[in-house]
Every structure is written in C-alpha cells, then in structure tokens.
Amino acid sequence: MAERRSRRINEILHQIARGASVAALMRKHGFTRGELRRWQHTYGMPFIYKEPTPSQLAALPAWRDERSRAKAWVRFRKTALAADDNAEVPSLDARSDGYDNYTIRGWGDSRVLLVCEKTATVEVLHSWAGKQPSFTYANRASTATTFWLPLRRSVEVIATCARVARVPLVWFGDLDPQALHWFASVRAGGRDELLASRDSAKLHLAYVGLDSQWLAWLDRTIPQWSWMTIAMRHVDREYWHLVQRLVPDARELIGPRASEMLDGGTKLEVEGLIGAHRAVFLRELRRRLSRHHARKRASQRRRP
Image 1 (cartoon, helix red, strand yellow):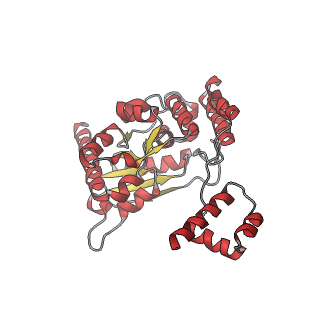
Image 2 (cartoon, helix red, strand yellow):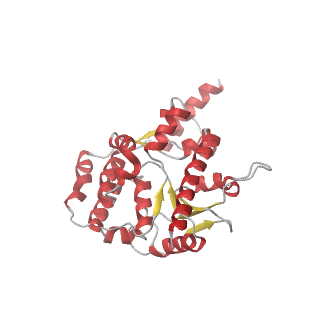
Image 3 (spheres, one colour):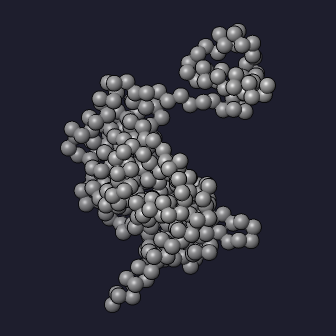
C-alpha cells in the first residue's frame, strides 16, 4: 500500500516537473496544495532534463570559428547556456566581479598545499573520526579552494602562501572538462590570464588527479567501479573540445586512458571515491602527495 502511494506521488511530481497543470492534477487526483508542498519537501522535485533542439546543438561548435581564446570562451558559454539552462559552465563570465573568493585551511608545519576543486573533498580531508586525526593533520597538508573560475588576486594569495611555506602547490579535482579548465585558470594565475596568453603556465601547479593513474588504481582496488562514472551531456562533450584548446597539454596531464574516457563521453567525479571508498582513497592520495613532497625536498637540496 505504502509503495503504491509513493509511486503515485512520484508520478504526480514528474508530471508537474514536465509542465502539467497543478490545478488539473489536483482535480484529477484529489490532493491539496498543502499536501503537494509536503510531498515536495519529503520527496523533492524531480529534475527533467530538456534535450537541446537540433538548431541549438548545431550552434554549440560555433566557438571554433573564433581566433582568440577569450572570444571562443564567450561564444561557447553563450551557446551552452542557450542549449541547456543547467549547463555546468561558470555562472559569471571572465570579468572582474565581487564574488571572487578563496579559502585556505593550513597547518604551520605543512608539507604541501593542496588546491581542491570540490569543497566536499576539503571537508573529508579535514574531518576527524573521534580521536583519529584528520588526513590533513596526520599528513601535514594544507588545503585551498577558489571561486569557479578564480581571478588573479585569489591565485596570487594562494601562490604566495605556498612560496613562503616552501611547499609544493598541488591540484586535485574531478576528471571532467570543468575541472581541467579550473586547474588551468589557477596555473595561469587567473581566469583572465588563461584567456589572454598562449604561455599559460605561470605557476608550478602539480596535477595529481583525477587522471589515468587513478583509473589504473581503481582497476586494481575497486572491482566494477564503472558505476561511479557519469555520462556527459552535449554541452560537456563540446566543453571538452574547448578545454583542449584552452589547455593544450590537457591530454598529457590526464594521460591516454582518461583522455579516451572523455572522448567517449564519460566523466568521473571525486564524490564517488570519497563516499563509498574513503579509506582506500585517502591512502592512495597520501602516497601521491608524499611523492610530490619528496620531489620538492630533492629540488631544494640541489639548489646552491
């Protein structure tokens, strides 16, 4: 009985999400607006993805006609939002704004400054389990997050912190075009700087994932991990093509297997790892960060 009622409520909510008249559904099924609000609060409103029209799909690659990076980005963003109201592109264009921000959470004796795309990753790294120290405390790791996409001032502050502390600056994020664009903006010194210069590697920002090495690790560690992958929508697939223009070394950064994965229209987000497989994920991240710390120390010892 309860299952049948839940199914009926779910069908009603889906009809409303598709644009059906609430008043007509109330007359047909005999529910009140108060009941509808309770259902929405309990079950949530389903998201109905609206497929782009053929003309909108045809307009997505139009950015390829632009000669400059900046014009290509502006044109892509415009056509992407026209094709998909929920497209995962930055909410603000590459202009100065008042929403740029950064957060740094550090230890005085840090060995690495890890720039994370996702705040969810930062919360996991800083969380304590009873008396068990957090990942950042146990591994002397500081973290930083920025606005999507960051401006020059935010990147300068983060880079200055790493330079003064004499620690490597390392990036960790999803395996998708959005994360690669974000990484490249930080490495270039800001989102405007990435669009303005062909030589966009201003900072030495090491990339530790997600990449082909993580995919190989998943094969060895988590059987049948493909459930974590997400199919990319039309805008995401075109975004990947754009990112390869904005970030010429994108394929080199993530490796051949990860590149093939994005070419095929599939991406991988960090949440799948930090949710169901947190312990093994943290052990592997610790190994990778330790390797970068060792390289940094070796480089410092070679200096006169």
